[in-house]
Length: 168
Image: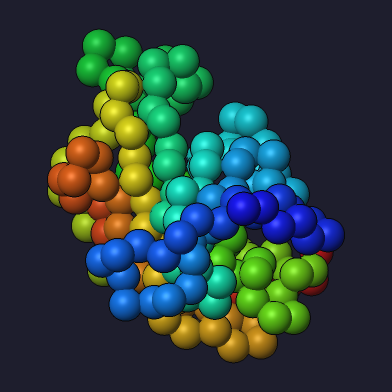
């Protein structure tokens, strides 16, 4: 089933049997993400949102390929995705959640801080980064998220992300 809104086309699927929520999850394709985030190549670091629960959480995918421009210099003989870009990808998934909050449609989320960020494994070409963000706090001009990035079920990065919300 699909529903069409002013900004995005959201594909809705049935609730997950393992989930406590009765709300169906939603999928956003790259065209929908581009309507919500101002980032563009080479800085758009989310390929798809595979699970989205409004006012609560989102799970996004970043397919990491050898063609990424940062791999030319990080590092030439041992390509590793820079940690700051993993955190940025987590923030972009969090930005999707914030943009859907009531009254936040015309807001841009900017980093206000990061806490308790830890890197657990390198992310390399060929990896599929699965990023989950959960809304912890949302106020008129401030948001806080818990974020995790995993590769094949292994934790790559986690932490708390704080956002300042400003008019677009």
